[in-house]
Length: 205
Image (cartoon, rainbow, N blue to C red; front, side):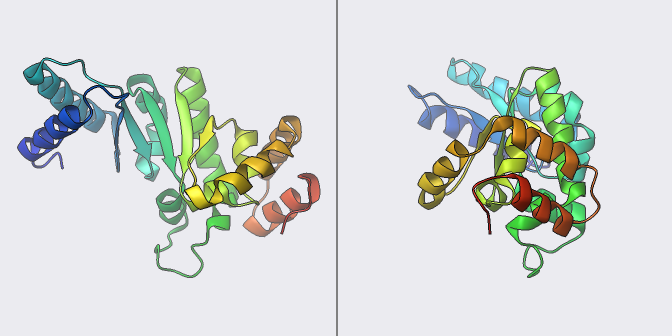
């Protein structure tokens, strides 16, 4: 979208108009660098000035390895962060989203967990809210790990909301934290899945 800034600015103006009198927040997908975030923010502030409204909080979706590498700068300059577990998992593991191996449980791969941990650490350092969206957020073998890593909130499908809430209520945060720390030292997702099954109660599939 930054290749067509006029179209991007039009979208911002539409969002600002539609979001008037609401608690509007805007999140930019597929951000790779801090410079991209700054360019988006400049367009947003210009659009807000034209409409004589306050610019809403601007966050980024972290779903590229480049964004993970830039997590500290993004957390410093964004209003909030959201980790896109589906795309990030595929990007890190070199999987196509249509690959049968690209299941939500693969977000428990130690390499993916390390990336999530890096983003969460950056968010905490700069006092930013960080969430996780995508199918992995609701997966019983991944949810305890996300909680243990310090994710602030999970975005799940409405149909899964009650189940995920009930599961979280039965988890102990200290156990999740210990399990997540151990998971980061393992080598395969299978090892992580077994670890979660062993330590996070009630029994998981």
